Structures are given as structure tokens and as C-alpha cells.
Length: 222
Image (tube, rainbow, N blue to C red):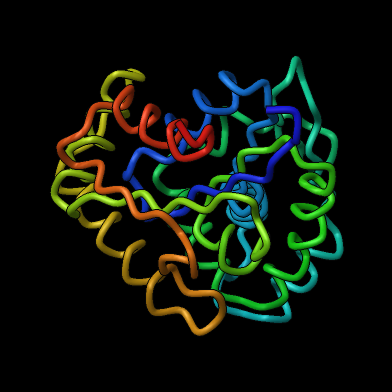
């Protein structure tokens, strides 16, 4: 494939988007864009300086006073906040829930929209998130929507965190995942949904290699 495509992979939390997107990007020699990390970056800063996640004025000040950068480090995009690498610090459930909350505000989405589009302007990118194919890259060459039932996604996220050495209760993950689903699907601005023209993949009974194989199959046309 000589052309450098824009590939979007959307879906709810815990559907396997990150793992699948990273593998596909590596296989194709593309850049992996974790757009959720950008929202997590602002959420991390908001929690750090203890501002309200519900006040537009506070979020506007946050957006104007915070520098969020994407840096290509050995073929992978990493997110920096005010010059600091926050890649590890933004991966907690607390930050994830806060990111889902602030993403409902137009001021936050507008702040990050251009940064995302600039990153994908030349193609050769696998963009993963909640509104990649519907809002950020509506003209993407290939759009996918990865999904699984809520209970399965909760189990996956719980196992993922335990594997990383985190001490977290299953009930806590269940509560947070339910809250994130509700926030993502019911927000007025760019709610989570399958983008027009997206290929839907139910990952519940598929392994990661099988999901990757399906996506590569569609892209390669073989």
C-alpha cells in the first residue's frame, strides 16, 4: 500500500481500541494517535491544580494556560503537558473519568481539534478515540467502530490494571466504566456513536490478533 491512509478506530472504553490500534500502526509503519491521551492530559492538569471540572470559565483558563504537545518518539506519539512527559501519569481511572467529563465541553474539544487534525494531515496515521471518524477525521480513508458488551469491557479493564500492578476493586472499575459510558454517549457535543460508513466489529468473542486481522483484511482489500 503506497498511499498513506488515515484510519480511525472509535468505540467505548475497554473495547480494545488502544491495543488494536497500536498493533495496526506498527504493522503498517504508521503513527499511532491516542487522542484520548490529549483529553487525559488536560484532565490531569485540572486535577493537579484542583479546578472545577464543571465550570466553563475554569476550563477556558485551563485551556489557554496549558501547553499540550504531541511528540513523535521512535514512531510513537507521546503527550507532553507544559513540557513534561505525562504518558504514565495520565493512565489512572481517576484521570480517565475526569477526561470523559471535561470532553463534554466545547471549549476543551475546540482546543484539541486542530492539534489532532494537524497530526493526521499527511496520512499514515491510526487515530483512536471516541469521535475520530465522526468529527475529527470525517473523511478518513477507513473507519472502524470497535465494541463489546459492558461487562466484558469491565473485565478487560480490571485485568489490564491488575497486570500493571495497580490495586483496584472490580466494583470501582464497574462504577467508573458505567459513568464514562453514560457521559460519552449522552453528551451534547460529539457523543460517542458509530461514524457514518464505519465498519463495526464486535470484539467480545474475538482475540486481539483476530480483530487486527479483520481490520487489515478490510484495508488491504484481500
